[in-house]
Length: 84
Ligand SMILES: [Zn+2]
Image (cartoon, rainbow, N blue to C red; front, side):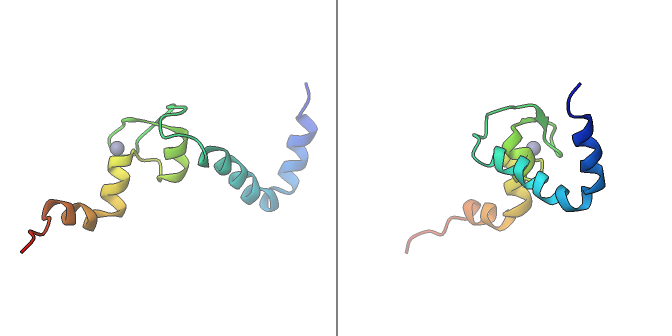
């Protein structure tokens, strides 16, 4: 039964630590591969996503993330300019 005291103290300084704890958690998944710990579901299409995507891609799979954040790139891809 260890950790009870830690929990208590964490609550006391929650506002201070939430940022760094969150950051620590995120830094753990930052270096992870996109197919590691596929324990999450995409916000949009419910596809299995990795812990990395959950933290760094807004909880979305790569496809939904790209479609949400880079829609113009998809357009650019569709209408690839012809070389004159
Ligand atoms: Zn998705």
